[in-house]
Length: 115
Image 1 (cartoon, one colour):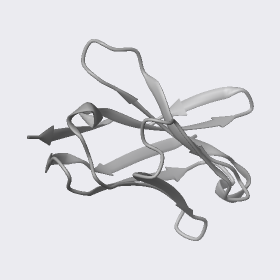
Image 2: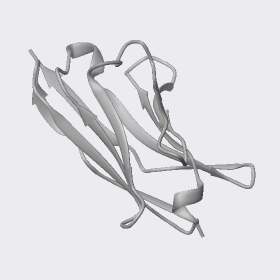
Image 3: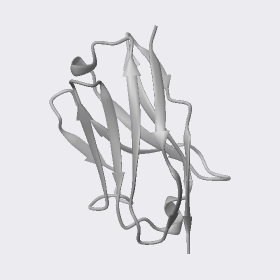
Image 4: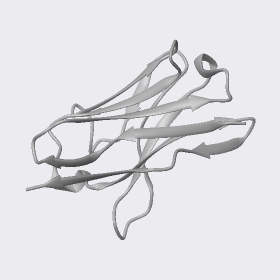
């Protein structure tokens, strides 16, 4: 059974930094690409960025050069390093992985950026 357990998040001042973690079990971690999504109040869930099995990353333009996605294939963890956060980054963040055509989600972590 696939489980994604998120940690991190909370309140951060504008311009500050925060790191989100996602522990993933039930898959052969190193073989899978995975992603981070976010959903702001009143908005659709959107892709923040992704990381392939080989470590290649892609980011939405809104977070490029500020956010970094990384993975630890030893501890089976996915990370989202958020730097220079802005009020527009306030959202619930979700990690995501697909296996055999099924999409699995973390429980969500709220990030609130204060002025």
